[in-house]
Image (spheres, each protein chain N blue to C red):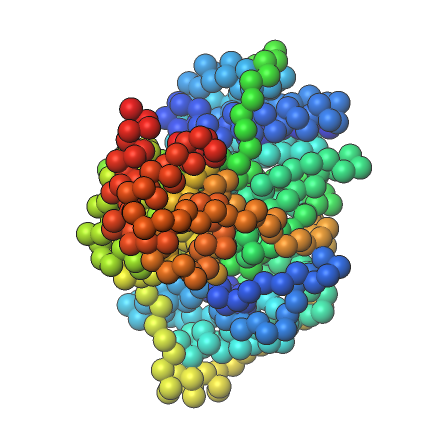
Length: 256
Length: 325
């Protein structure tokens, strides 16, 4: 069973995000870069399937040179080899252009399953997996919390509003991972040592034979709208304070 | 109808979902601004009765695609049907819900139609005849204005953010063949396991009562459940509470959980880690109850009580019950 996992390097979720004064992007100083948490679930699931059924796990990342760290993390967890799509032209690539580059890298490789995170916690777009599945003409199973592979079929659990769906699909397919799928392992020290020797192909747009054509652009970024200062309800009696809060919610905010 | 503003309505089990009326209202507003038609696409099997409601919220025209294969949502079936009618009629704007189904469908369609999609938008406007969508990035730590440079310009709208306003139009029904005869759907829904709580999903709730580490354990949530019962609210949790196994994963609010926009968010025993604040700061009103007056949650709260939540919450439940009786 050959499994491909797409991973992205993103700012750690504890990072404070500062928008540049001209709104052109975020201030990248003081950011701790990590593997997108949803991609970690994808890597872990791929490794577990490989441990049961054999085969190879290949990680693919599109990003600047520092994204190599994220590929090495996945290799240290146990993935076999990596592909790094790195080109200045990819900077600011829209989801479609990103998926097109990934598709070009993946097309020559025989695979059974592709894992992606259900979204990246930086741009929160949640599109690349589905667009990639479309470009490769394979079915998608998105935002899943359980995966069972049986021969040429896969059964997944997908939480939706007010319910969970059990969905069956055929391989090859693309699955996007949601939190709850598994508990990703930490890279072991021997794993980290081994990862340094595992092969990583670096490819630019020319090597992939793609031209970056963005379908969407970010006009500008802004900080979130400021919230008006709040009211701390004073006093010593919890009952009286609770009564005042209920009154404010009812009469002032009119939300209950 | 070229140049028109379309939305894909969402139904489940033949019942229109509330977000569909929100989409209709937004499509109506944008269509009026551009001086074009607002069109709805509705798919299913035996759903023609829903067209009237879409018209009531502003659809000039309703494209109705029916097929037994569309009774239950699948990416392949719905994707093929929407792509077919969009390619034929070429609307310039296509709106969907940023719901579970809408996210799955809109992203696939962005691939099929090779266009730009803005996910989970909280505001949409027209600038120079083109759609500008405003959406949270980093779960709301900043906002981005995005524009598609291809057509149709796609956006998925966050449920619960836009109001549904009645604005009746003709809603002329145009039936179309979804083109699924002999099509192979590569995925199949085997089973729908309904949640037992009967409460709305966090992403659709008007009121959320949420608990964090301060709840001290799973049993602490009982008082939040009671408050939620009185307020017809949904119970949420912080990552700390979910990681501790006190609450299921689906209850998590924050950057690695659900990003929510209720009318009221009541945070109990939640200190306000940056990744949690990101996920709930777009709530219309925030109330916080926490022992620690220095907790960052109070920087976001409209109303705060610094005290022991185990004393305050049962009283709050009692007071709310009184006010609502």
